[in-house]
Image (cartoon, rainbow, N blue to C red; front, side, top):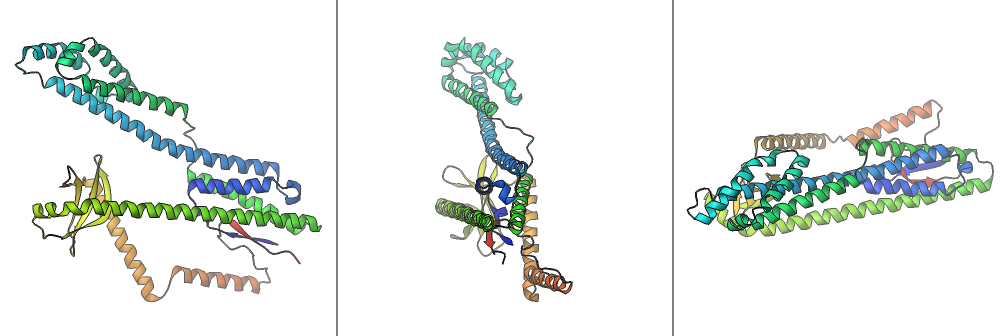
Length: 383
């Protein structure tokens, strides 16, 4: 019999998970399917699932891409608001040339008021219309010093249009199942493939076929080990990057503590960074703690100084619920430790009892570890 053991591939990131399956598929496909008992239909379904995983991973990338589109739209809104605000600022100017320029431009911008709140596509068309109308009043635009913001608006609108075109060109089927569903289906196909290989080895009557299957399993085992190594390396690199980023944040915040402590009338050197951060209204905010106390404050960096931030109610509630959950989890862990009982110990006792029961009934103990994931294989030739 052949016994497959896991490399915990369910922990792999999506890209590594898909590549792990593709490597396994390539190894199986290269062998005579008749000798390993794998059908063309099963192989095709497995490959289709792997391709769907790859497509789903692209969809995640496109989600990030759509965020860039929203950023460009936000920039357009800022340019429009700045342009309109600058025109209105000349309403009461005593300078004749500027007053005349204002009177020519105001009817134009008034006809486009509130376009910031329109749908994205409708806004794109109206911005181009606004550009056409304002270009006809080039002298007035220059008189009110609006050329720079006008150019910025044009560039932002064109950048937005280019991104939207690219998004359409690279769009993918939005009806794809979730990554979790796709991964589970791909894993099931691999499980079936291995089951067929196991049966083929058990039923093989000639030494050459057994040898071929053993070599295949060893190759699949080696490929799985390499995938796990790749996963670990990627995980270590991400962890190192996170640590480096925190070091930089500590270094950035440290010189700003003294002025903030003085403003709050706190002792010098009393603040420390808790290494928690949030994005609030497009600003990155950092949580600071008054040492040896339960006093916390959220701040943002503005012009080389710390400014206190009042978090929205929904964020405060979310943080409060998270803190309660962490406290409950810590209490449960402490209780288990004090009683000397762990979930792993309970599971071990259940497995031991299950094996004893199987033997008592005259059954054969399974060589496959219950609940183990797929990936690494140990081969035990049939005597």
